[in-house]
Length: 160
Image (cartoon, rainbow, N blue to C red; front, side, top):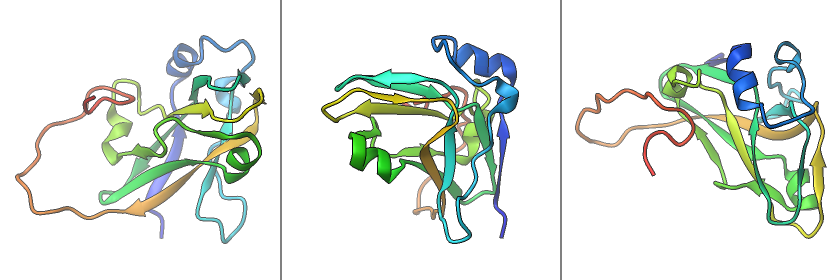
C-alpha cells in the first residue's frame, strides 16, 4: 500500500538552507530516502552535508527532501540507532513530526533534521552517510472543532 512519495526541494531552496556547509552533495545527487531491507519500517535519510559536532553542539541538517502523504498519515523522523549508541547523537526535539501539509510550507516542505551531540567525543557526518530514518504512521483525530487554518511557515511553524 503506497501512501506517500518522496521528492526533492528545489535547488534554490536547498542551496539557501545548506549555505553554511562547505562540503555538500549537489541538490540533484541527493538520494531519496529508502528502506535498507524488505522488512525495514524506516526510510533512511542520507546526510547531504559534512558537519562536525563537538559534545553539546547542535546542527540543523538540510536533507534536500520533501514528502507528499495521503490524508491520515504522518512521517516520524528518528535518529539511526547506531549513531545514538556509538556516538550519543540524537534529535534535539527527540522525534521529528512531519505533518502532511508541511509539503506546502513556504520552505517547500524541506525536511530539516536538528541533531545534538549528547556524547563525549566529536562526531563528523559525511555527505552520503545515512543518519536518520523516517517512519510513516497512520493517525486518528479526536472530537474537536473543525480546524481550518492552513500552514504557511516551515520548520517549527505551528507555534512555539
